Amino acid sequence: MNSIFQNSKDVFLDTVSAKDYIQLERVSTIYQSLKDSVKKPLKMILLYGKPGTGKSMFLTKLYHDLSAMQTIHLYSTPILDESEFFKTLAQDLLQVKYNGELNFTQFMKIINENPMHEIPLVLLDEAQLYSSALMEKIRLLSDTRKVKFVITLHKTEKEDLIAKEHFQTRIWESIELENTSSAELKIYIQKKLMKANCFDTANMFQNSSVDLIHKLTKGNYRDTNKLVYTLFDLYMWYEINNPLKINKNYLSHKLIEMSALQTGLIHD
Image (tube, rainbow, N blue to C red; front, side, top):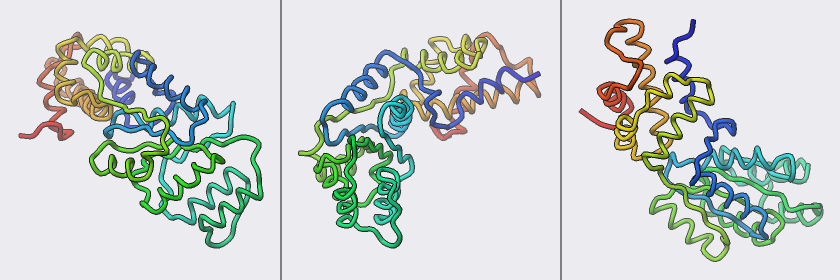
């Protein structure tokens, strides 16, 4: 028989999948804004926020929700080589295979020679990893209105500079993602567990426990997932080796802090 803690631990694996999307009021409002922006005649949409605020999840869900209705492509891993980037676009958008190096000028010739029936939507995750030169060409491509982009950037001083340098006059929609509140974090954790039928462990997350988790993670989804994953790993150890030390009715603040130590959220 599987441990309830094993099943609960697996819920918080560090993966990005549309089925892992958790509907919170504020998150749903932001996501609807993103979907509405995609429908507008915009050239480019910027989705930005600190690491762990859900940017990749938003792109994945957008791809999942729209792929049956329109031409949409998701590049979750940046294609850093410029020629490979344009060759991949040519293949995905136009079914054109190109041998050898493909530069921006050649790609635009292919675009002009192969008109598309609709404007494709291209989702670029982790756009801060692209070179400045390639980002400028992406901007030029968006200016032609032949391809619409949704890009994600980490919110740091450097990436803010990139955004201003390349897209200040081009982005017609900019959406910022932020860390969640303690109240929302409780709903997030409990909904994730209940979606996996882990009702017993969902009930262990009382307000005081979630407040501590929020204090340690600052409401960051990625850090929360890592902490809770590690927390259930500790509970599994105690369940096997010292079951009398754990109470399945509420979370131990000591174990929460031990999990934070293991994940590097706090230090000795």
